[in-house]
Image (cartoon, rainbow, N blue to C red; front, side, top):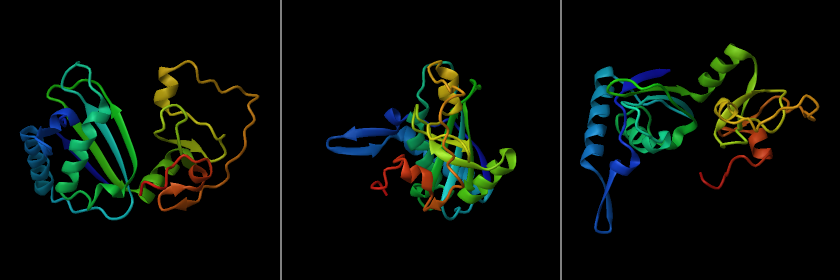
Length: 197
């Protein structure tokens, strides 16, 4: 696993600029990319092979309203150009959490091969399978014997509408099978659009 402490990335609104019909990376975007490339070079980072899991903790520089997803383009592109991986299409599992404000801001990034990431989660809490959250659609881990509809911690903590009554009919999913980074259960329940390869 690779763990990196990087500067807080610019939002996608500031990462690009439009010149006529062309869309270019802005001066701020190029500066951020150079910074990340330099940091990775000093750390001697080599590209990670195969399907990847990327976990990102964002520490905003101030309390202004910021969308976590708006920072991903600059961050993931810069990691690719810095040689953390060959192509961001390798990323099969992506987790983002916006954390408390930190002076100057930062992004703590963990990059690991998918099988290593899954083994670590199994070690921490038994056998789990990755499914899409029924609230927001992001990947979440549930115990192998859980029901089909699952909610991530964020959706559960931000809403009182998600209820899990004891009498709910719980169908066991069985052991997960993996096909090119997709859980068999995700494929069966239509959680992944396999046309977007």
